[in-house]
Length: 569
Image (cartoon, rainbow, N blue to C red):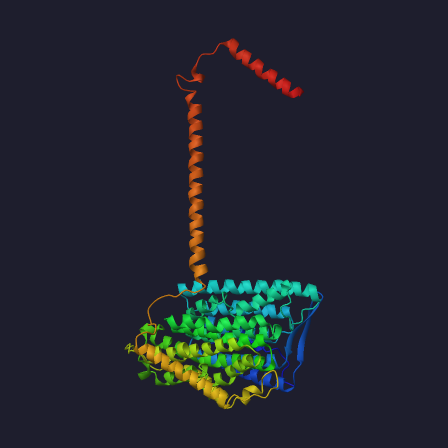
């Protein structure tokens, strides 16, 4: 039993409230202590076994549950505490109350979501995730960040509305709001909840909130953003839709298409954003396959991705913090002035590329093994291609263009010590998990016997990495590799950033032209009417003539007669 039977999000929310009034080392100490003590408390709570729940409350006729823990939610709970600790240490040098308070609320909201025992509680934290995270985008205080944050918030509100609608229909159908397996059964609520989770998981055609907003956030804000939102969605899919075959094909698409955009992208943080979608694809495939090995592989890869992707975002954030630049076309040669950051970045690159003895290898291979064992041969080939692609754009491109390539002769130095400490913790975890994967395997939802370091896995991965590196070198020497150019690349967002605005502009132009014609026609008609009436009052007009009294009397009599006839009728 834990020392404190308290929902994990509560200490984060309390710390955020206190952070509004504390300053300096007192706020820093509090923000570090909360994830450390929270992790220890959660570990003790998890030691009591699965199925622990507390925080029952009732709304209308529904019994709701604030905290429900099993091995799946505990794994994400441990992960989010670790991610919060690393991110807080990384951000210790800033003195921005908005960022620091919003980041604690954001981390707490993620913890509230993964331990929610019912759908309504999940919805509350689902919306808090959107509300708190958008301030990390706006904290950069630039025009681009503000507009990107609005687009980000709009899509997440759409996700929340779909989730709420699905919850209402689900409650009416089942008479309960318990958060468990839902599955795609053709019902409206199952599709609404599925799409709500899919938006936050960056499904194809809904993914641009990630590649649009994350690179516009602050150097520290992006590290927080990369850790929580999408992983909460992965958890929700693993809880509600395991074994849904549609996810296999969605995940395969997610793993594949970002590669092409990442290769031509100039903004290195946007490269990592595309890479994040690529890694989410592996997780979604594992959830779609739905076997014990596949689910374990998906959540293990989610755990590792938060660490190594966070390390890469931290290294690029350090570059941005020191140089003020993040485009590959403007960087290069920094290994001479930032050797420690260079080494730490390479460790993150090796981990995401799934080099043996690094963390990515021990989780990605589980998903690929599950795919081949369950007859998804062509999906396995796609994942193999995606593995080669991620080595190109994240394993090689990120460290090469940031720290090597041409010497941009930028004034630079190592980032603040707290940034180096945070990156070192993440790098150490990448190595520890890669060398001793059983430490992570013991936390996985299902008991399985899996050995990543067999001859087949190691040789296959080494061959893949070797030929990918060879292809990069050959393309670069032949000047065939896409150069780093100062440009803006649009993918599906072209629909709402170009096509829809252009179509609306054309529609409004047509409406304005039609309105102008109608107005001109109306004004012309009124002018002709006025002219016609005025013509009767001119010297030669009918109203200017002399009329006999008898004629006037006859006219009046005629009008009275017509009036009497109409009245009688």
